[in-house]
Image (tube, rainbow, N blue to C red; front, side, top):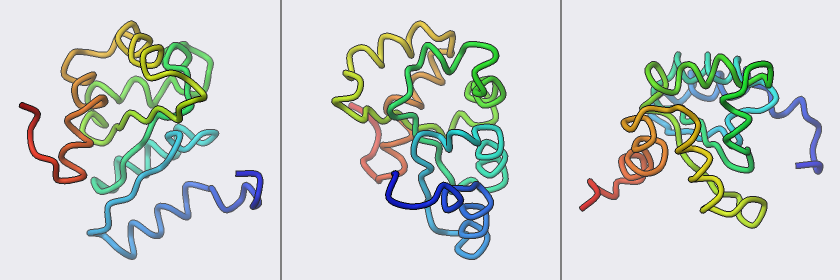
Length: 129
């Protein structure tokens, strides 16, 4: 948001909240951009921190040199249980975003986690039928 200084979005602040409230489930919107690597480190430290990928064109997340490289590499293993899809519609249609995620190179297990399973678990919705 342009309504507050960017310093209030730093990953160290979320890390401190996660330390102070270890059972509180937290979601870092837009996966913490522009501090993608640092937010990945915060999520690795705290299993209750989730990284939400909204308003991000998935085709850029997988592209080397975009700043997402390290996080994308962890999405299929270390962070698989902490990633969430967010549409941020109307910025990008869900159809386009999901199609790009499917072309990103993520494994089927990671895609399932990103697009459904993690949100269902986080919000207590139960398994998909």
